[in-house]
Length: 208
Image (cartoon, rainbow, N blue to C red):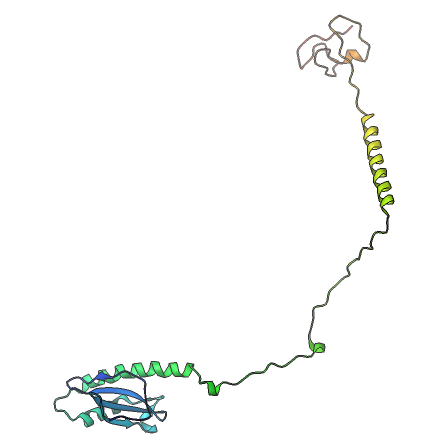
């Protein structure tokens, strides 16, 4: 025996104390439950709108329907409720997954609107950029300007070399007579001194 239009949302769990199995699903987008034994479907039930609260069927109604359908003495309703709760948890999870996946028929093609060029806001540049004019000097003029720069540089170096400080001559050990300017410098270390003894080397200075 097969059933058409049943969309399972849970696995098939055995009803404790029996050889039957219970499963939850949808028939024509409405909650339904069915009882199976082997490969056969014993019975199925589609819940009415008043039997569904918060989007899911009342679990007490599922247990009551199972007890009436199976009709086995000494069946434990508490065990049937545990099975129903486990199936309902699976059904909730699979139901939420179906909400996330929208069918292709419900998707719409979105066309982007073309914005006119006049409405596009572009950043304005501030200030101005100086454009350098291309050089109009010929090769000979460039060569002449380079030679003038080199000549000016050499003249500056020659002028600076003429202003070097001239140090006084240190008298030799032969005892030659020193000038007045030479007497102000130590003949041994060249320091500019007017002392009798050089404070740097400690030797006596040749004063008159």
